[in-house]
Amino acid sequence: MTAHQARMTIDLPEAEHKKLKAIAAILGTSLKDLVLNCLRTNLLSKNVPNDETLRVLKETDKRQNLVHFKDVYDLIDKLGLK
Image (cartoon, rainbow, N blue to C red):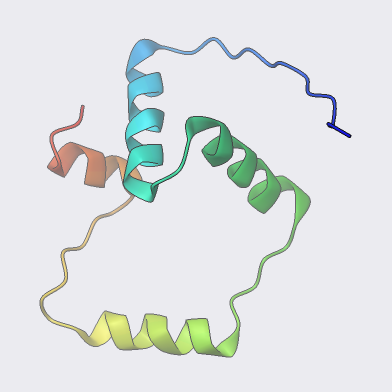
């Protein structure tokens, strides 16, 4: 049995649409899945990193050769995707 689907339309500036598509591409996902995952993560659940995730994040912060970005928009800017 196939689940029923609903359609949703969002009007947004073309530049924002391009940014979202770029973010989805960087993450290797579709725009639909990016939006759904953001909604689920930010609105429907209280995700707390486990001990292993916290350990890996601390180890990563110690590395000298990493490129740092303030946020995803800084990443997009530095990649020239504006």
